[in-house]
Length: 402
Image (tube, rainbow, N blue to C red):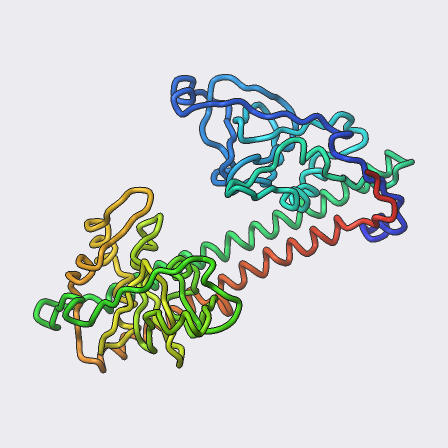
């Protein structure tokens, strides 16, 4: 059998615009009420990526056949799907119908657009968009311009390889994800067991008596620099791996730093606001040797206990339930400092705190580490897939056609 590398060797590649190869259209507006009133068996796809983009099913369909669709608006703009069968799309989706299938393979186009579409997304005004007039301009490599039969053979072989590799990657990722889920469940179980105490076994204290909450200073985005004195913005706390940080992702000038409140090694930095309840009051233990500045919407929690012990306890279901009961706001959720100060925490002797921390640190490394363990394996599989996909879809551009 001829190999893909032999197929790709010395190709004469044509680069027409997608608008010359296919017809593009948008979907139609469909409200939640419309979906409910017309419930049926035919899927409706919108701008989300969860559940393959499906937001419901109705009793009619707008298209039937093979297509490529893409998301036109929002955070997922430029996400591409291969669609078959009877379905409909909403107004925040676009649909691509190939004009001549003897020239272009649908799955081949889909794989190509998974690479190219994101490059054409316009992110201005805070609402990413990828409109039809932009998609029409995307250049598509058509190998063997003078031999349509061989061109389709090459496209089909690329699709076959990528389909197999996609399936293998999906299987490996599913296995690793299932293992990671099991490990996290096990980790959560042992964490909660280690942090559960019998009545009278330990002293329980409100956080306000365990330590002191110091409010962070307000900062503008323009205050941050590429170098200088380390500073943690409240919005970054959710992006740090785990609950521990040794260095910052942003900085402020030395002059501004003199005006800001600072956390020292062992302090907890707690963000008081987020768009979801899981991230509100996520504790970040500062373990760097130098002081670090913090922004507004945070508290620095200064104490004389084990910092990691407190951070682990603030991950338990007990604290999650407390946050839900004391939250304010809907779109932007907050838990105020006076409420935080009243949350009861079990305070065993420091030696026992450190024993618990040592056990949980090992579980945490096995379960969540981004540099070792399963998350890293999942990331490597995805990177490997992207590498080979891009390699297969790399063509010479000696004669790019406008």
